[in-house]
Image (cartoon, rainbow, N blue to C red; front, side):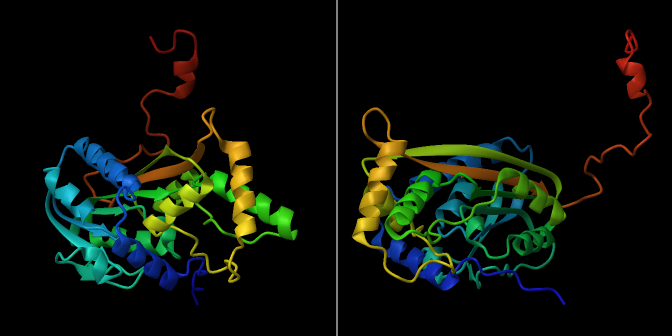
Length: 294
């Protein structure tokens, strides 16, 4: 019997905070999504093919689909969201978090931006996406990875340890780029590629960073988070530590968002395959001999 994955994320609280952030609609709070959409368009521009049917998966905004359509690389977009509010009044499909309601081999392109890190079962999601892709279909995603908000994590932990003698988790545990690549292979994707793009934002204080995170709906949704309200003293001390350790010469603090880009293709007979062991026409030993390559 397969054991259910541990629920690290409280999905009910996650959706509640995402809906609240959407309703507040604070100008500039989507800076990270806008940048990621631009990067997505650049990456698709380098792919020499057109995708007739694409799906955007739990991106939380219709703008991802709009960017795909305006790229000229996509014919039709299906938007899948966990709440009707995220469809933005456009046609789409609402599904429970972690469930992709697509028929097998029904899409040519699947895109997920800044949402995989909020999934309790990333391997299961990737398997569903691979099954929904037609042979030689492409999966392209960006997710927050290891190093994201590392400065905030360190400052909060140090402040809480100093004040209470202990610490509770307040920032998500993020996967690193090697783990992301391994997950793609485990899910059955061919030709997996991963890379990291660090993005640094600067703020006047920790409180300004926290305000941006609230505006993104990106505050802590850990199931293991402390249910006790954090005190003003904790955040004040964390802000002092943050400024001491992670400020620039002008006094502004840095916040790192480490974005992992992952891509993989649904297996197809037409794809390039690695050579079988022993099938090379020239031995490595011969090449490495002086003059052996001549």
